[in-house]
Image 1: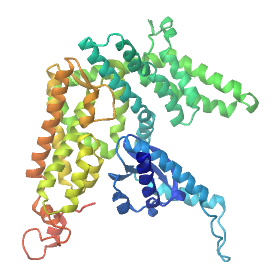
Image 2: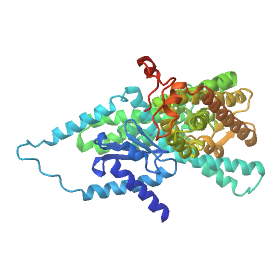
Image 3: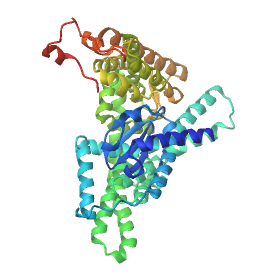
Image 4: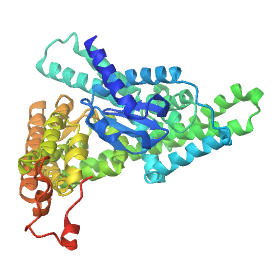
Length: 508
């Protein structure tokens, strides 16, 4: 009961700071963030919101995102939804407009709201980023099942290797494999939902891919195999189903719609899936797996350096979402993704940079307090508080954090090049939280040791790069001061010249 009260208290603290129930248009959450659609962004009290104990940071994208961390966000969101419903139900009737003011029509109000939302989203609403968000929205809801099944698979593998509980391991294998055997259906369902079709029709078409009976069908001169094409085939099949369904809605008479539209949607999309998409998607999936193996086998250290070093900027730009289908394809094909442990090194570099910042700014109580509160989450792979609260506002420490990630990625990539593959059976967690999901080709002990070594290298490289190269004299002069003290001049007591002032980075 105490936990429920705590979650409700967090939700109650957040609600008035985002403009109240009437200002909330949509509510959703991912692994770490409460994502809100807001009518009026200007009503949000950012500083007060960041001061709420459970809030690790805020991010503004297509939605207003409040970072609460894994586990917490899944418990706070239902309480927040209840409060919003209660607030809207109890909201007083709007005050009448002044007599001399012409009342706005519903169409005019809607137009005003659309203009406000468009202005806020214009910066990030490029077609490519919108497409990537759709892709992320398809796969992110699957992450909890991937994590749960991945941990059970790891536990089952450990028991099998130790020859313990032989009567239980087949049951664990079924639990771990059941979801992956049908993941195409869930991808099809979410794809149709995201692209504006009927979700169950998307799932029905995608189910063809995993149906055992496709083994009796020949396409492109060879027999199909159940699961051929995997999640990529399911995604393509469901998108096709959406377009067929929308075409049917335009041409089929309403009296026949309930019979004709679903039938044509499944028939047309299903035939194209069987005699085209499954083969093409299967070839693409195989190519992705082969390329990942080739990349790390031949250029392991260099590839790891690039992947680990550039992952934080990809996250900042939202381009990391393009990797989600690749991770899922690798997990479906090989049982684990070899890319995620390397990319997770970016978080290690971020942690090392934050610790160095803590020591380099001994007089800035505010930043040091932020680092102390955010480091536990950083070690567990939740990097937003450190990124948006520490390194990114300071500027140069964000770059040195990327250097730490690059060295950690190079370490893990080097061992991949030697033949010791280090992978993750699920996506989502990183940092220490990834340990239960690790898998590889040379035993769990070696896999854990390599990943742990990469984290240590990332921490050290991020720390050293930030401590020695992360702070210019101007940056130290500006930020290494107590909150009660004014900032000291950069070099001399004399007033700074305009050119000197321009060199000092501004905090955001």
